Amino acid sequence: MSYGWVASMNKSWIHEQTERNISQFDKAMEVSSPESRAYIHDPKAYLSRISEQCNYLDAVKLIDWKVCLRKDCAILDLGCGGGWLTGYLSRLEEVKTVYALDSSKYFLLDMMPQIVRLMGGRQEKIVPIEGLFAPLMFDDGALDIVVASSVLHHADSLESVLKEMKRVLKSDGLLVILNETPSSGIRHVVSLGRAFIKIFLNAAFHRYKSISPSISSSGYLYDPMLGDRDYPLWYWKEAVHRSGFVIVESMDTGLSTVKNVKGRSLVHFVCRAA
Image 1 (spheres, rainbow, N blue to C red):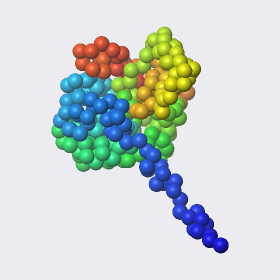
Image 2 (cartoon, rainbow, N blue to C red):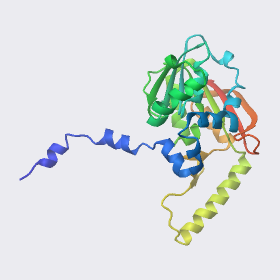
Image 3 (cartoon, rainbow, N blue to C red):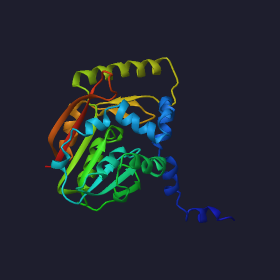
């Protein structure tokens, strides 16, 4: 009788399975948005996309960082992507360390060092971390600031991620949510209605979809490939409140995502622990 299966039980697949199943966001972008291939592998084109074609960097500069930062502060840039915000923050004299966290090895190892150099950032201040939104492998109260630029709408559960961010912040630390595009309540309901009709018709007429959008009262997953979710403004505020934060400042930048193209304004939330 063979007991080979017993030996195999001594080896855990969980770690390797997790690594293999983590979506590399850069690859998902190429599939979901083929036009991203024009800039996602070219640091100069990527930085041009962020700062010249889009308003992400301009919007971030509207924050009064001198008020937000303390001397020798430690910052987590959650979902740092190519590292443009990491590079920007590393230039500020009050910043001692920027932990740049992303699930994409390509962004962390290939793009970010080049982006930081192009921005005149301080590479010696930056600690790259390959990881997910939660759990965050920091001790309780380890960080002065957590920043998240155009990333929290990718969270499977907004409230649980916010609570994990609160855990790793000092009692007087700041959470700075940047460059989100919350919809109005009415616009969100209209979007839900349109999505429901499409989903219903696909199901009714047996139109096979390997993956498809999904709707619920806690968000509209409109791009399952990238994990993009639409949350109305009221939901953002409620999730922040239920996670133990208060919104110190809510800033409508008046800037759309893409320059010279009408669209929802980029919005920032500066939050403290309640």
